[in-house]
Length: 168
Length: 135
Image 1: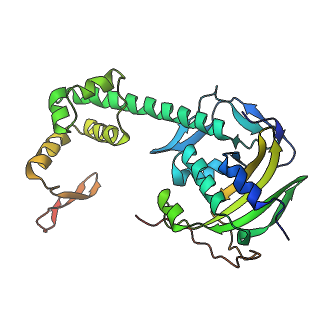
Image 2 (image 1 turned 60 degrees about the vertical axis):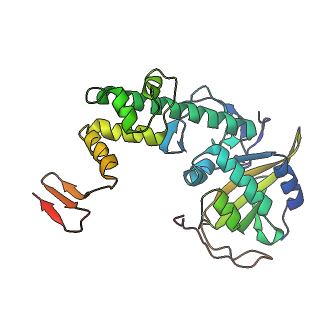
Image 3 (image 1 turned 45 degrees about the vertical axis):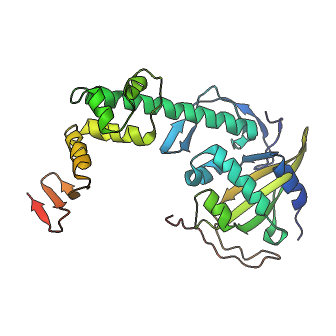
């Protein structure tokens, strides 16, 4: 851990390990993840600047990885629970080319799902009707019509045949 | 004006991972580009490795603490390695401090330049080039 020393930013305060709440950082796909209050980060007693040596950086990375995994598992679990009302777990695994039993492992915190999978599961859970769209996607092997604009009373769709269809 | 700290000693300390990153919003300004503190650390080491005497801008003092300032155009290889093609010019502020395990680089700034690097003593003026390209 960092030795006590004078801060290279302000030249006044002493840099010492500090534990506190409310510290956040951008991490991978997350715009903000909270660091554990118990994690000491060398911090200037005067200006509050934080200093990351090798050991601190690794500890922060590990804490962020854990925080990210917790969020991914929680959202993944919520989505799987919703989707279970619309599709069997086995069919969903087949549809998304997941190995059999993978979603059970996620449910029981034995696997941390990727951010990409969690995003997909969450989007499907928000509109379970899209499960059928995924099925059609694999059947047709094309992405099909693209939703261009939406509002409460207006939807514009561009079919893949080229013409523009406007639905009101 | 000459650098306060020997660049050879800075590079030697960096090569042995004796680097501390900090300063005002240090992580806030770099992590959004690299998305991980470990990558920031690795990138900082890469920048220190590429620093040359010609990149020296000047010194800045905070009380008794003196830092050297550098303006660098990093290599295409370094940009590619970290997926930040187009983020070419970087401002660097550092000092060297003697600690228990030898000299340590205290890197107080590593971010987008706030002005063109007109003051480079040897390397000559350097225009800001800091816009992420689609890969």
